[in-house]
Length: 99
Image 1 (cartoon, rainbow, N blue to C red):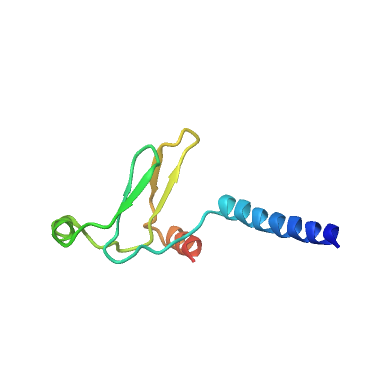
Image 2: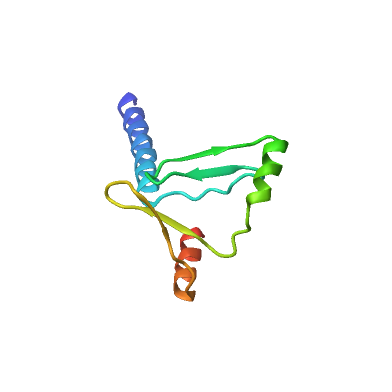
């Protein structure tokens, strides 16, 4: 009986670990919260913040709406790049990835 419980627990742990590895390999998409600001640095690290109303109003003065899907990637050394998604084909690829 205890052996069956141990096997069941080990199986569940294996399934949850495999899901974590799959998500890491595929990447995850999340939705920004209203008012959230995301910063992407050239070396690929990112950060987010929720500014107060005054800071948010100041940032909005410099902000422009995003007109189409945007893609970022990093190279083997970790340097960040923005991919040109202005063509119809690139837009379709970007939107497919974002779904």
